[in-house]
Image 1 (cartoon, rainbow, N blue to C red):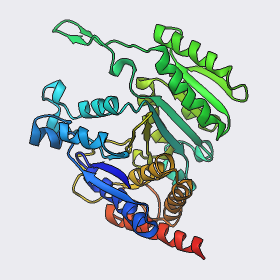
Image 2 (image 1 turned 120 degrees about the vertical axis):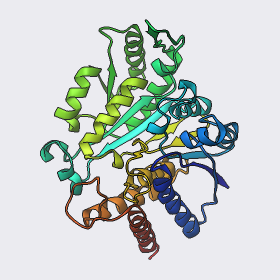
Image 3 (image 1 turned 180 degrees about the vertical axis):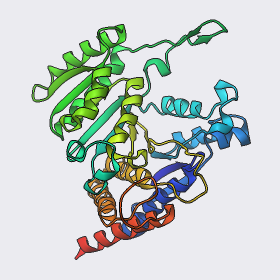
Length: 358
């Protein structure tokens, strides 16, 4: 059996996660994958019920599962509560407890969505990159943290072993792609970045077949828009990766299209990178495709079913090519709601699997 913890979260989280679970259950019925599911509260909804964003019960379910499927958390309702109880703290605590240090964020252009991007089509067409973000170190977790009325302190800390292990993931990932790594830092200013660059250069000697370039984060932010097709694996620390991966959403025209997988030595956490979008929650118009593509990553990295992952991804591309879209995607064709988009993908995936059997 393969146990999946399902944490729908806040805002549109439950709506889009439902479509991802729908797909997984359809695949399980069709192929007898041995999937089981257990749901729990996280984020703002957990604060409302339990007074904390990550209840012990939720964490225990995550630690007893083979993978976690997570929706978005947070919203204006909880913006002014005590910092330690804010919904976003649940994400940091969950990532730290699971030890999921490697955040994989694929960014691949889809021809039918080129018009949805604010960037010129000729620049976007053919983009296929991965932002690999170190997820459990850096300024988000560094101590001490301090604030009074006159001063605030956040500490940026990286240990050599943290950089080495994310570098290992990057180099191994690049071997299955175009064998190019762009390491992003601010080594002209930050001591942590100088250590980062030193470790990456040492690791590069173990992989002579991989080309490595270094870019300062500000330059990288510009080049991702100017020449996104030149990038393959973009390797970066926690905060820089957080910012750059959201910027990369502009390449596709919507954060509603970007999935992510967070991998550790034992656990794996899967979540779309978009937020909880409370302004559209409950309206049935949220784009579930980032979550569905996140399910494809779960199939690829945790279930080791590259065939099924590719089938899901190609089904999504076909549905979009036929013009079906949610309101966030400014393309011609038929406007559909969240549930209908999920149904279309499930139907197409099952049809493709049936075709494979013939």
